[in-house]
Length: 537
Image (cartoon, rainbow, N blue to C red; front, side):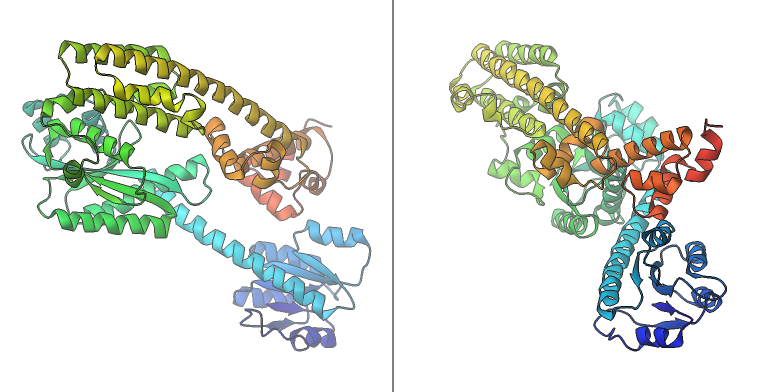
C-alpha cells in the first residue's frame, strides 16, 4: 500500500496512526508528492494507493492517470477536502475505487481499505483463472493433428471402409502405428457437469482442456489419441489394446479426480475392451448404452467387462441379438431435433426387422428398456419430468408386450405424446427467453445479475442460466454485455453525450472498466469509436 500526501502529519497519521496489522498488508510506502509516488510505482509492485487530490504541482488526478498507464490493476482511494459531489464524481470517472472527505475518519478509511483489498483479491483470482484459460485458448488454437482426428471421426461414423487394405493405407498415410488386424481399446469420457459458469466458447475451450488432461493421464506414455467424434462424444483410443487392465482403471480414477480438482468438472470414464478397428462402432454403442444406464454413480469409472458380468446393461447369450438393437443414440438425436416422423419410421423399421427375424423375448425387453431410457433422458434434457408427458401406467404397459407389432404400437403412442409435450416445452422456453430479453433491455441502466433476472420471470437461477444458454448460445452475462455495448455504440454515434455519462447510463459506475469492456468487445476505445463513426456535425 502506498500513501501519498504533501502534509507530513496527515501522511504519518494514516501510515502510523492506524492499526493495519489485522489486514493482509505486507508493506506500507510513503510519498509526499506525485513524482515520488511515480518513482515508487516504477520500482516495485503496489496494489493499493491512498492519495490526497490537492497537492502542490501535479495533483491526485494526474497521479491516477499515470497509475492507469503504469499499473492498471492498482486501486486508488482519494482523500479530498472538497465536499462538492461534482468533484468526487470527477475522481470516480477517472477510475478511483472510492474517496474519503477530510478530516479523515480513520475507521471509515480502514473500512474502505478492507473493501479494496477484497476487490484486489477477487480480481487476482479472476486473473489467475483467465491466465489458465488463456493457456488452453492457445493450445486449443493449435490443436492436435487435425487429419488424424478427422480420420478417427470418419471411422467412428462409418464413413471409412473397414477393409484391411483401406485401413492399412490410411494408417500408413497418417503415420498411425496400427495394422488392420491390430486391436484398440476405447474409453468413453462423459462430461456430466461444469461446476463454474462458462459461456459457450469457454466451455468448448475447457472441454478441450479436459481431453488434453486425458491424453496426459490416461494415455501417458501409451500410444493412442483423445478426440471428440461427430456425435459430440469424447473418447480415448488406446492403440494395441492393454494387458494390465487394473493399471488402466487406476489411471482413469486419477483422471476423474484431476478433472474435479483442476477444471471444476464432473467426469465419468467407461472402459471398453480390446477390439479390432472394424468393430469400434459396435463397441462405442455398448459404451454409450452403459453411460445411459448409469444414473446412480456419477464421477465414476465403469468397466464394461464387469458391467457384462453383473448385468449393468443387458447381454445376451447370443451375440447377434445385441447387434439387432437400433442405435438409441441416433434416435435420441432425432427426438431432440423434433424429427418425430423420421423417428416413427425408424421404430417401424426396427420392429419389422424383429418380426422378420423372430426376435426373442429378451430382445424385446432390451428394446423396451432402451426406449424408456431414451424418453427419460430426452425429457431431462428438456428440463421436464417424463411423467408430465406420459403416465406411469403407459410406461409400464410396454413390459407386458410380447410381440414386435404390439411393441411398435406402444412405442409410437409414447413417442407421439412425449414429442408433442417437448414441442410445447420449446414454445414455453421461447416465451421465457423473450421475457428475459425484454427485462434486460428495460434495465440497461442498472447492474443486473442472474438472481435479479430469475426473479423477474419466477424461475430458478441455475435452471434459467442453462435454459438461456441452450436457447441462445450465449450466457446471460455475455448477452447483457452485448446489448449494453450495442446501446453504447448507438449513443456514441448519434449523440454528443460525454462518454462517462453514457457509461453511467448503462450501469457502469467505473469508467475504466467500461472502457476496457468496450475495447474488448468493439476492438476500439469509446473515443476511437466515436471519432470513426459519429454522424453528428
